[in-house]
Image (spheres, one colour):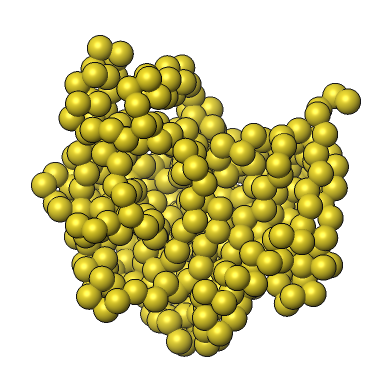
Length: 425
């Protein structure tokens, strides 16, 4: 367990935030330990849906700075005095769209970071593929920049294949293509998208990867002074051609040899990109021929995975990540140091997009001993079920095993009904 006294009297800048309660609670937990939190945002509407920020959990930070968070120079300028000296003791981001700017600002200010090169390689998936090179955990890949490159890419990676934007998050735009026609349709769809979900310009390139047949898991880790500590392995349940993550459980029980090979694979990956410190959420496909890396996320995981880690490992990865950003030592936990057993979460999605009108069945679900955590309210707009922006909440369970917890969470989710209506009606 880390010494939380390291927070006292420190000032930490957070560049934007992931959504949902686990990230907000991590902020408040650091403040409770005496850390002053500054929040940098480009705009409040991403979080508040038009409501005042004072009514949002992020409104409880010590200071809010309105900055162009896509521009690392603007971030660094906002956090330094007239002589260029930092006004904060650390800077951190858990937002995929801002970790690179944050790392550049940290390096400029002489503050701890994961390392700019590591963050770039993780955020731009073709750079990760290039960094892995001939590692057996890599897959065949091609970055398609113009239509004329598509046929050669398909020939190289084979069919079926995966098409995805090289620099996006929340499973946005990930498509499984079984035929050339489907690959062509994915190219046309994704090439037409010229900005990220957070408004950053994109060139329309599309990454095509070999489809790795197997079971997808994620490895949760914390790197301290270049040495990676592993919390454990999380299961994933994926939805159809969108590859959307719909449920998780932790920790996955694997054969010892498989578990050892998987952790060695992730350790090699983080070493290959030069990951210096901080949390990582590495997605891996377990195939008949060994593990194949899907992607690396240089941040804490979403979907309450960090909550599962905290429950089972007796640690708080949100606090550990903040301590590292402040240059403080940490002592991450391990499975069995927290509550015994395992945990699971089922992501709640509406059947149809539109205006959310009601969420029914929460008391019935919670009667099973499950926590239901909505993060959308009546009147909010919910998206088509193509990526994680369509999620409206979670059903979270803890039990004797991860498998039992997942069964309970599924049963609870089945008792919940989410009503929507077409907007404007």
